[in-house]
Image 1 (tube, one colour):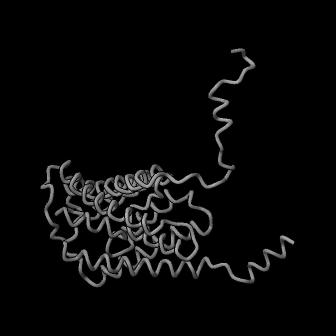
Image 2 (cartoon, helix red, strand yellow; image 1 turned 90 degrees about the vertical axis):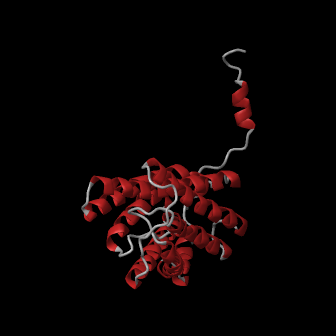
Image 3 (cartoon, helix red, strand yellow; image 1 turned 180 degrees about the vertical axis):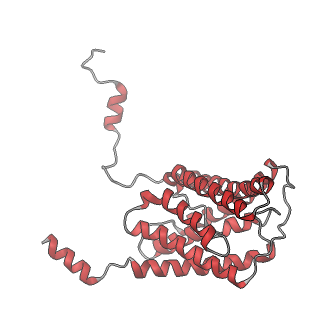
Length: 262
């Protein structure tokens, strides 16, 4: 082969259809996306629970414990979204998947009903596995139901606020074509919500289920799980309503855009 002859790999690459610049890349196989959701949820809960255990072993100051727990969660969540977002969208959260499915039904982009039925069990299984893994790493009982009651009304209100804000953030970024900022924006919001909500911002049904399996700093009593999940679903509805209200495209704006184009 001379220097002017194309290599076989170049010929193959040239013959293979390439996506147009800026086009949406092909979706990954569903099994890969489910695996990403399972691993992501597991890692997220392992970070939350593990950092909580570590914090309580290092200090008795509750404020410092929460600071350590929230800081680890911010960095860990940001990394997980950046890593797994291109595969599955990095939901790790049934509330986000459900909101995306609902948006897709109304003409937006998102998961189908079949994909939702795969995502949610993967997220829950991953969250439970992550809690067990964290307990194992710190020599705790692998499964010990949490005794941390979180059933007070003010905590339930905190979950509505935390989840509504999360949904508004994610879908607001999508509506304004700024999802590239999601790793930083979502992680930052959760870090802030740890401190400004009374519930410390679970904002995730799968994480809530997983944290019931550990009787440590980050745990939640099984009797409190249903209430938290119910408020998270309400928060999801509120968040979607706010997205529709705040990021709506009005007829006047559309007409103005058409006039400008003309």
